[in-house]
Image (cartoon, rainbow, N blue to C red; front, side, top):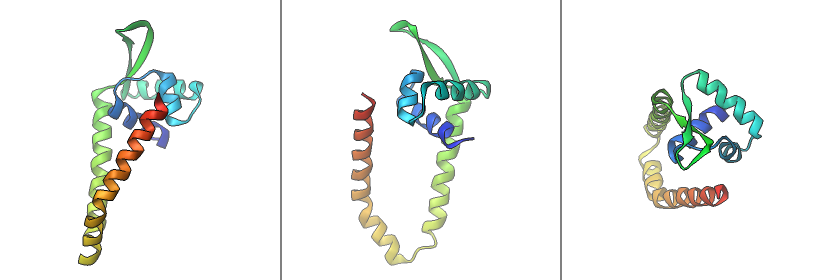
Length: 120
């Protein structure tokens, strides 16, 4: 799976159903490229298209259960990989990481807010 496909699935998991044009902007690709990508993921059973209840002219891209499962599995694999790496650190290095967690969490919040603003 391409990085753009995985990122698109993660975006859908975080934000819920989105228009293809919104996904294209969020992932930094053209609308035609996102259309092709969505079609491939749809054929793979990872996403589906549904009508927007608030605007019958609009089609939304939604995660299927298989798509959500893929995102969860990929996320857990990342968590497991970091856990294995952290096990190789010294006690002082683990303490330094723990002390940095509040700043890292704040950084992640700032990034999330910046992304939300750019999506508007």
